Structures are given as structure tokens and as C-alpha cells.
Length: 330
Ligand code: LMR
Image (tube, rainbow, N blue to C red):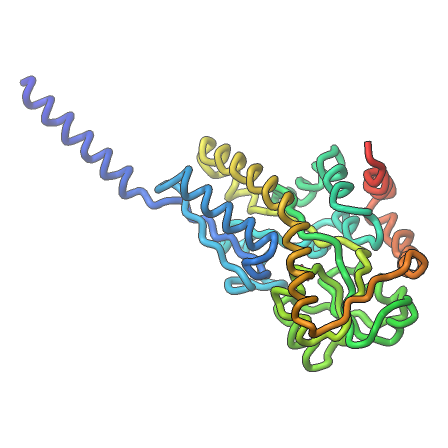
């Protein structure tokens, strides 16, 4: 009798073990549009590494860089359909889902990344992570890239130099308005179309960070960069609300812990990655980098600034005020 029940117990234990072993790991597809040697590209890879170390056999992360799974225009829809579980779109790409994140596109809003950190760590910044929950999209973290510089096939010193030029912009009404304020012609294009657009002359210029320029070889097709630091490229790491809430709680907690660690690392490295990319562009001798005088920079600021009033009601004046105040060091 004892022997039988022991044998039965053994068999049951073996079945349990093989069931656990056979259980497929949860797969998280993490897609993005930039190269791997950028702040976001590095962040996605670090997330994969830590998850696969700490949740080995339980969670598998597949990273798809360079729009290789979904590009701009398709990735958010794919997230809602469950074809991808994590994305980190630029904050300029959410206006279809929330008007509040348009805040981040206002020209000359943040003086530096420290001010961005202060805002994002405050109550209003944190609340924006949940601003699309009712649409099925939840923000898990903010990752930095950096401040934007202008690029063009003609030198841009003063705002009037941009008149009549065609500029590629992300899918953002604020960024469109910013170039209209310069009497230029904005054109919304996906990130993976930028190089060709500049090469063929569909557009004459654009705005982005040094790391995005260098990793996409934009310096091969642009003679001039103007170090304007006039705006921000920053990301929201997002997931599908149903997917995230459906995860076993212990796994979700561990993923959140890992993501918090990765976020610290990405945000610590972002500025250095951009400076390295800028140096590579300098060393390539393909393009001239224009440094603005304080007066010239003030002129760009003044020309672009009316955009704030145009979008103030949609974004919310209190939100703009809170972001602006984060420029004051505590
Ligand atoms: C762009 O489209 O210029 C950026 O959003 C790309 C990115 O994700 O950094």
C-alpha cells in the first residue's frame, strides 16, 4: 500500500515537473524604430538581458530594432492587437491617443535633461503615463534620448534661413506648427523614410538628436547641422493594458523592477551616447556643425514660441506651467 502511494506520488511529481518544464515562456516582443547603438536601442537590449537572466525560462524578450517588425504608423495598432507587447515610441507620436503628451513637443520647453527628469518624476509627469489607459495603452517608464538639433542642406543660423524649406517632422501637430511658425514646410514622415527623403530631396532638412542622425547616417545627406537644442526626443515605454494586467503578479512585479533599473541606466547614458555620436559626425568631415550665438538662439526661440499659445488649451495650461517650472533647479 505504502509502495503504491509512493509510486503514485512520484509519478504525480514527475508529471508536474514536466508540465512546468513544458510550459512555454511568456514572450514579450519589444519593437522600435531606431538603431541598436542609440539610447533606446541599448535600453531594449539591456531589458532583454536582465529579463532573461532573472526570469529565465519564464519570460523571453524578442527585440526588433530599426522598424524591422513594425514601423511608425503601424506599431501602436499592433500593440493594441497584441501582435507586439512593448514599444517605446517618441512622445511626439501619441497625439491620436492623448493630447496631453503634446506638451513634450513644445519648442524650447526644457532647458536640459535634468529639467525633464524633474518634471517626469513629479506628479503631473507620472500621471501622463496613465493618460492612455482608457485606450488600452499603459506607460511603464520614460526613457531619454536627448535634445534636438536642426539639419539642412543649407546653413541655418537665423530663423529666416529656414523659410521655404521642406522639413521632415514626426507625426505631431505641434512639430508641424513649429515649422509653419518658421515659414517652412513641414512634412510628416516615418523614421525609416528619413534618409531617403533627404537624399532624394523630398525634404531639405529635419530635426533630431545626434545619436539618431549618426546611426541613420544622416550626415551623408545633410551638409549642415545647427546645434539648436530647441526641443526634446524622449520616449514612453508602453504596453498593452490587458496584456500587462494579465501577467502573473510575481512576474509583473519583477518586470517592473527590471524596467526601473534599465530606465536609470538609459537615462544616465543618453547624453554620453549623443555626444559620442556628435563626435563621430565631426570626425566624418561630411558636414559643418553650426553653433548659435546666444542672440541667434534667442531669435529661434522667439519665432517658435507662439506654438505654445496655439496648443495651450489642448495640452492644459497647468501642465505647461509645471513643465516650465521644472527648469528651476531645486
Ligand atoms: C523620429 O521619428 O525621429 C524619432 O521618434 C525616432 C526615435 O524613436 O527616436
